[in-house]
Image 1 (cartoon, rainbow, N blue to C red):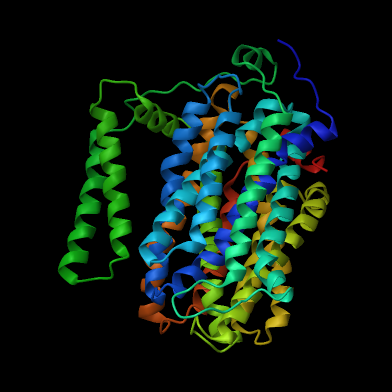
Image 2 (cartoon, helix red, strand yellow; image 1 turned 90 degrees about the vertical axis):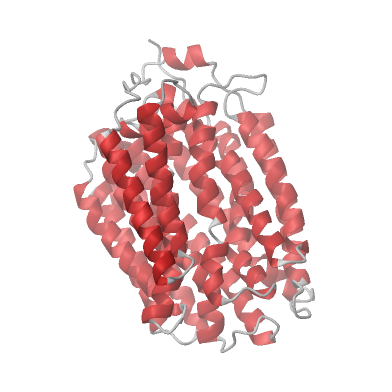
Length: 496
């Protein structure tokens, strides 16, 4: 067994630079897609359903990409082919999205955009584990967080900046403003160029070399028959019962997502228990059931953390334009001024996250990894809840400080805890499976948030942000159950 070589600052810079482009596209999506949907005629209670594309594509794409990237070796290497082709497709989607003439086309392009971003993004997480020794992994994730912050700040600010330079920020009914057009065109160029830089300026270890390093943990033994027939049938019955209740009770259509998820998971389990093959689905399900204990407990933290984030991403535009700028009409100057301000707020929290990424290792050194993540999640909770009480939109920038700390922590500390317990041979698949616990809460949010707002909160989107704050509080409490390896604490504290 040999020790994996350490990399220089610029080598780590090059391997993480592609995340600048990925986050550029992701930030444009988060800050502007609800605006595009509303401009094209979407009602408020339709927005969560239209956003279903984002988490659903992640749920499907990331474990598949992780599974196959673990088994890929080409002239471009193991992970880099996925970086390149995902970025190409995402760039095409960014060019087409602001030219959508109809709501259905914009929704379809969101599927393409999010699926393509996921194809590029998932292998980037495994790439750090592949290329860096344990002593540098936290530094690698910190560098990714830095580029996430920079990309998100610039992308989120673009429509606002373009308005300052005289580009039209309003348009006729049903037409998307030119500020959004030019921002998405710039995003397509930046995404492909940044990912292309990483593809051209990095190299990868062949699989046999990667397995020879002394930090390569043995593969986890998996049994493709671990799922019982009884468990599969219980999930199917639960999904069928919920589906029947929705149909007979004429409940909100968004709940079909939840029923479909239960049914889909039950059918997948049934297939695994009955299948005699050892194909990708069987292996993915088997690996999921064999995942390490710390990963299982981190999954619950991720679940509540990402429920809160998704609530923020899909409802902040409607909340701020309606409450702080007094307009829900997408053709009005007040609405579009508020929508631009949301871009500024999103840029601000990403900028604060870049600064928080420098401070968080110091926090970890003083109070520990688990307590640090719990505290940062609670700071984020206070920030989301503060939207209920702040009426001057300028003061919402203060709230973004708290969101920035939570976001930086979510992007780095769970991975610092997770990476050391994963076998090198299955780094990709387990990073993909970990994504289940990022996208499942987003699917749940898309299913129930609209119903909750309509039933209990008079369809006022600002209360979705308060529900997100409550979810952050629960995520922090779940951190108390997560065991933390001493090596992970040491690595996190040396991350910068």
